[in-house]
Amino acid sequence: MRFDKVLVILNVRLKAEALQQYLPCSANIIGQTLASIADEYEKENKTGYYPAIDFFKTRDNVDPDLIASAEQVAWLVSKLARETIQSKLRPIFSSVQFQSIQTLAFSLPKVRPNQADAIAQLAKHYTPDSVKIELILSMMRRDSEAEDDRAEPYARKMMFRWLEAEFETVEISNSKAL
Image (tube, rainbow, N blue to C red; front, side, top):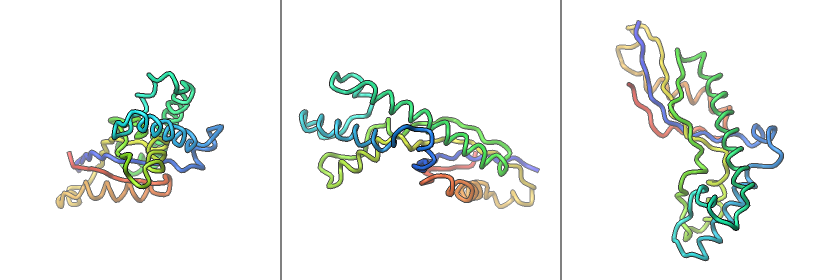
């Protein structure tokens, strides 16, 4: 027997209906409101880019409750994603260790003001329903299975199989055997 470990970095977006049962309003409303504020800021200041959500904490004209709502939804999304991944992958892998969880809405948007669908893309980015997760998955394999050293493709395949029905989107951005 041998243990294989695989580091996996993935992005998941929660299904709107899964999130809606915990929230008084749609997370999309937060994203749309922040997108319009960011677009207005960019037009006034001609920055050529849209800032991250944290920037708006310092602005007097942005309702602090809006930022607090985004943070609360982000916390909930992180918690739900973690619980879902843990419950679905724990029976498959010997261990599932979370290295980090980041809400994508709080990162700097890759959207630029001159893009045709900038506001729609920005609203999608600022909606706090997606997280980037770094995991270390461990699995026990018989030596005969391990000889072809296919732990990493196996881990990717199992993650898609067990997670794709649970989330709106599952995207593995990187993985490597450790």
